[in-house]
Amino acid sequence: MQNFISIESIGYMAAVLTTIAFVPQLIKTWVSKSADDVSLVMFILFITGVILWCIYGWEIHAFPVIIANIVTCILATLILSLKIYFENFENETKKKDVQ
Amino acid sequence: MQNFISIESIGYMAAVLTTIAFVPQLIKTWVSKSADDVSLVMFILFITGVILWCIYGWEIHAFPVIIANIVTCILATLILSLKIYFENFENETKKKDVQ
Image 1 (cartoon, chains in turn yellow, orange):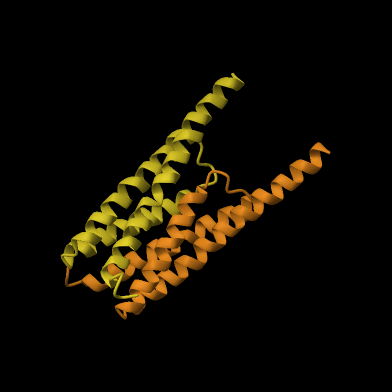
Image 2 (cartoon, helix red, strand yellow):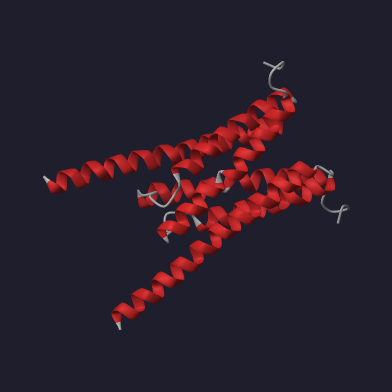
């Protein structure tokens, strides 16, 4: 297998997949305007971990680690922001409905 | 800062955070019995990526990479399984309600 796929390319594929995985979640949250079932704590812990990966990548001069984690951090922060925004927006709408 | 926190410990903290981040999502999905807002495609891509990280970790003999990704893989697979189960179970309940 090593003749066709190098170890490094497996690492790159892994990095690309675990990074772009957040794109469908971002699109789903944007389209459905809801992320009630998505855990707030999960995203806070995950974003904190991803920031630490960026620092670690910076310290060991591993630029693929930095780049992959910066992209993941942006995507995860966007999902978290949309979740907070839609939850507050929905609450506002519900309050208006009650009034 | 390096006197207090080593580069390696930053890497370990990052690995622990991006792994345990999936625990609150698993608990939330289990308790609410719903994961409609959680993207199926996200988890399929993420689990595939995590399996590739395990293979990569195995090939470069990086056991922390293997262990962290095996735990992440188990947690993410449990969330995905619960999502599929609850969606099918809910559909069954809805069908029964209609009948």
